[in-house]
Length: 212
Picture 1 (tube, rainbow, N blue to C red):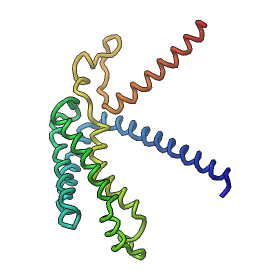
Picture 2: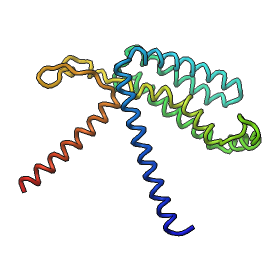
Picture 3: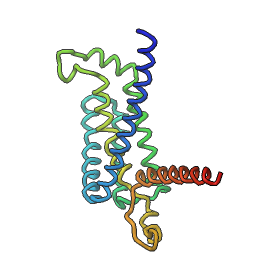
Picture 4: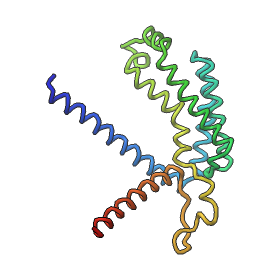
């Protein structure tokens, strides 16, 4: 392969990753808008999904997956239930929130280590059957499918729909000229804050140039 081909492939790969990141961010922002409008529906979805996936971990342990990792997954999903008591509002600095973040991170690390372990690769190699629809196919797609459903789905739902409890205070709900404003999710507040800082920086730079 030539040098030009390698350079173009390298740059194209990074551009594709950047476009993918922007697409995911735009999708999450749109999901935040939907979660704000239909918070009760999102709460029911999260409650049923949390219980369903939590109990599915028990079935996975019986089916042969490591018991300790399934037990951690079950503990993680049951740790989300207290967050639903005040949904969509959450106290960022509280025992319930911090514990949920800790077990979520531990669950991620636990399953990543399992799929990268030598035991899993050996089991995958011994059970691989190219002619089978279930046992064959791309192993990476199966791993991503498992992680999306059993590790990422519910935490992502909480991430885009939870609102800081400070947003529910009367003073926080007063916009300019005393007008009320809608509560915004934590993720949407973060994105809007970055956009406002970018706008202020751009306008400040333009003002400086005019004075010069």
